[in-house]
Image 1 (spheres, helix red, strand yellow):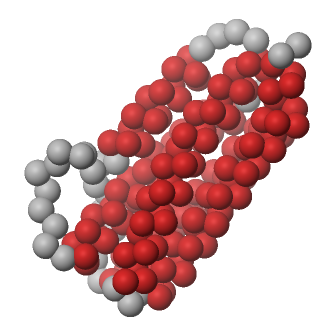
Image 2 (cartoon, rainbow, N blue to C red):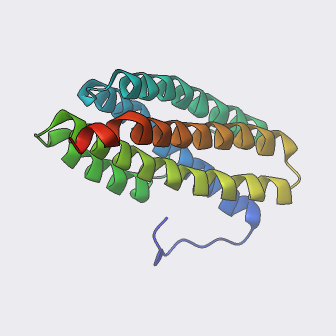
Length: 169
């Protein structure tokens, strides 16, 4: 959703549905991108973290589909310009050459940008679901938010314990 968008929201329900569609698009884009990040990784721990998060991201898509079904609308994607931009930046890292340890650090930085966007978006969507009294959706969104936080934490651990120290040698 652009800051200067011409979209009109007349209810929290409309905003909630829009946010779900935005997240649905973002998650689909990540399903396409995470294998590329794993392939580029030279760190076994980082490669495994990206592969695990791909499996989680596929479940995130399924959860969103379940929420769409629960609220009675067809799963639909609203172009997530933020994720498009984050992936475009990440593509620069995928195309980069150089020291593999430094490239791994760059991959982590790019991935964490996406994770932080998702944490903000899922937190907002969860708050909207709760305000609307939709505890089913709120619970599923909370599960995903928790997984996004753990993925971000895992990337930080990998960066601090091995990748960043190796890139300064």
